[in-house]
Image (tube, rainbow, N blue to C red; front, top):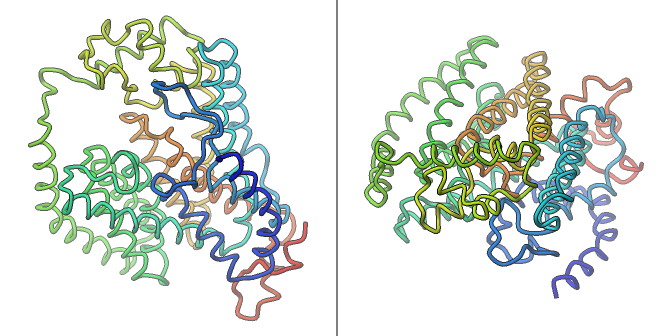
Length: 455
């Protein structure tokens, strides 16, 4: 049944591409949907289909060769977008990391399961490349961000119902876990915060999105999400202040202080309820430290890696959790180390970890370097927002492995694609694509009209 559905959808690819290419309204809906899709994949059937699945009981960060709605939309976009000069060097770390991870497949205990992670990262690189090509058009990043904003608003509605209707201490929204929502929210918050501080248009909309994200963060009752959000907001105000203080920035800083005071009682109540149900006992047993010890033991015994997506299998097979002093209950034995860098190092070895660092560093450096040079322009503010989002997500990942979940990976790939696409505009030898398109539109709005999109 699943295979038949996939084949039917694939048959619709070219007709859909022709429709999107022809009609401006469909084009806008297409890119908004592209940005929003990852927020609904968990809750809507058939938006994410496993063609090949892992064995029952397998624990990892990916559970099959999966095809999602975002992958399909990226294929459609491939047929409707013109060529765009985004340097292949920007994507080289993605290729290198995927290749290094693939070398672990033959030696893994279950090569098929190891290939699932390689497939996911290959898809991420493809999505990032498609988004980078699309962001040669000035309007596309804003459409993608609008979709992400609508997605986070849907998460807030679900979180409010879970908190006040179902009595959840930690609301996951439409995701399976609250940490997924907390991690993804970083990628939405900071671009909109930079737009609020640096652009005069869309003030009410940007403020509404920011408030929505903050409420989602609060309802997760995640110490990491809330703590790194505070750090990220502080960093944002520092960066914006370095570009030059304005009345708008000072007013926003004052409002942020008032909002922090207003949210303080709510924050206290949310965390109080969480710890009533699950009291902290880190002075007696530090679970994260025990997980880290287990990961370090595996890394020492398998310096070249145990195979992508094989951490928990190795942990259980060789009883590393008991050796590291992890409490021996079913949840802990099947858990994954709460540090994405340790996890990558254990599964892919030193070479994989180094290439993973490069994969993360290239978009981060691109965002801050080009964003700072263009800080007086709207593009510069967006890039600084993307850079801040990535930096905070990277720091947060020191305490979570959730960065490798497919929904987070998709949103990260979209942000990376927007970063590369916007940053590449200034390096093009010829006038960028949007100039030729804008000439066909008297109001200056950049659109995907037939003829302008021919390859």
